[in-house]
Length: 197
Ligand code: S6P
Ligand code: ZN
Image (tube, rainbow, N blue to C red):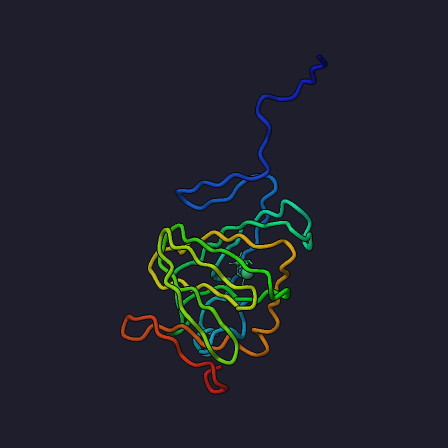
């Protein structure tokens, strides 16, 4: 019988620290979004201008075990949205839809308090509360965005098909359908009409 030798402990491409949702390792990629990069997304432009554009709103660390576009593959990532508001609108992710409208996605919350905004088109926006352990199935044809409605960072994980492809431009040009604002301490959806943006 032939034997080959290999190290007893192989370096893992990524690891998850489930208590913090932290994704680490040589294959982890990272994207950081600051307020300046989210221009045009918050409805209260005057308040947006008053905050330092370098202020970090969220970070994503993710793992692409196969090349983007691979049919049948999966990607995995952790998003951390900081607490904060622009005027009365909660800090949130940019939001996107999947270019391939039959590519669904799953989110699960690790910690913090959030709201998952699901835009079904035609101005219909639904909210799902995000709290530790919450699971969210996002249909492939629904645009999605996560807002932090709490006082601590909102941490959630996501798994999506490697050929889903993301469309960010549609939200920039047409809006998301609604804005999530704090009214009397309660997260409230505001319509996304021409005057709201
Ligand atoms: C990917 C998944 C998440 C987001 C992340 C940041 O399909 O929905 O990993 O990429 O939450 O949001 P956004 O809108 O900047 O991609
Ligand atoms: Zn997505």
